[in-house]
Length: 486
Ligand code: SF4
Image (cartoon, rainbow, N blue to C red):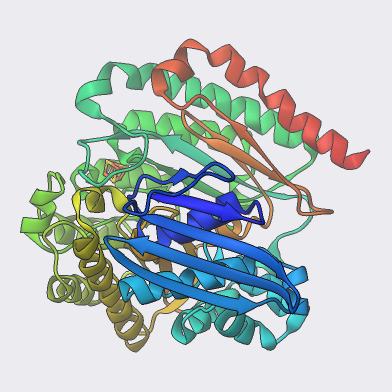
């Protein structure tokens, strides 16, 4: 598919809009002045100066069909000029495909952050800006508003010296077919795990020293992955002990561990986590269908989910999250509705509903992608109807850049059980220091909100073989804070 820009340079923005409709297409940009092959799939986005003023146009020719849209510029366009270009693109592509993206021209991954910003600047008009200017569907605008409102109390708890901590354990018992994370199956990486745990503890020590020197206050801790509970009880104990010796865990507001895969949860590990002060865990079914679990390569059954959830409750965990995924291979809207009601039946404190990222759609044709997108959207709508009736409300959200239709992931919570870490991380409220392979530390300036990222090595073997560099890079974080003070 060829994308041609005339009279402007909004390359990135136009590509993002085109991907809302054709997420897996190979997109090439036409050179300035180049003639287009009339038989090729092309989208032309133009900003033109005419005697009557600025005009924005889009003409799309795909699969032998053509559609076009045009609108005059307004004074408001001078502020965010990519908006009218995105608008004519969406209008033309909607006519061509019959699909209207539920989030309109909004392509960013943090709709609730934008909503919070607009609420601060425009008050109650924020929702109308979402629907009228950004073409967001009213129910999605209202969802973003509800999330933004729910986040406010957590955001208010954060102070200029606050930070949170993320610990990465990038190993899993087996690889799920849809997984887009850098995670290594235990079968592949078993021999690395003991050294990984040792180095991880050293990095935690170094990070604790840094945080003490900077005079920062720990708010939340999150051990994620991968699947942290692939570690054996002693290894889990070692990581928790490093955290306890370095940080004031008792005064932290929250300590979460992802026990994501039910097949890794044992009474011994739950006991270790409980005595280490872990208050919140995730046990992630993804689906309550044995057939779908088998199709996605999860080596556990629905019975295992019930069993491990009961174990966790028996071990005293009164704050449990369960993840579900809409759009899994072999799942249907009816199957997803059953998974929703099974999760609700267990009454976890949080249910997080994810949209499948795009891997699966890569092999689908245009019309199949549209059906798949519509089915997935219907699953999310079902969640938005069923969960409030069961006493859950939305409290954080984000979108992955490559999910069909750019649909959202939403965390739902029972009253007062919001995961603060999720809010702080998504809303970029304060710095998140991260340890482990693939972890990314994100520092947030308390004064300006300016964000910087510091990357650890992505793969465990690299993390281990170049560990001295991992520690050296901590100095860059210290430098960020020094510059902030100057
Ligand atoms: S458990 Fe999560 S991180 Fe691990 S392979 Fe499956 S989807 Fe990926």
